[in-house]
Amino acid sequence: MNTLFKALSHPVRRRIIAMLRAGPLASGDIAAAFDMSWPTITGHLNALKEAGLVSPERQGQTIRYRLEISAVEEAMAFLMDIAGAGSRADAPAPLKPQETPK
Image (tube, rainbow, N blue to C red; front, side, top):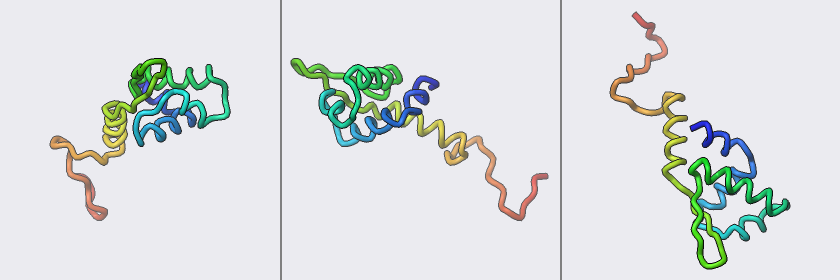
């Protein structure tokens, strides 16, 4: 989980994730969207891959990256749980504003 949140902490990586929501993209297409060196983009893609957020697929000479929704869902579930937005069967019912705990 730490690797996942570390990967999401960088704005370039979040932008790559947003780009991949529309579907898989070739690494060259991802790199073309940024004004930075190829090794820098490769480093960002590797960080996303290590976190399980993207997976590479080789198609001939091209590597296409696909968003891995399961990793995103895991992060969202964690955030919803700590925010109290998830509904758990064992969780106590929330207090109404005028109620005090007994």
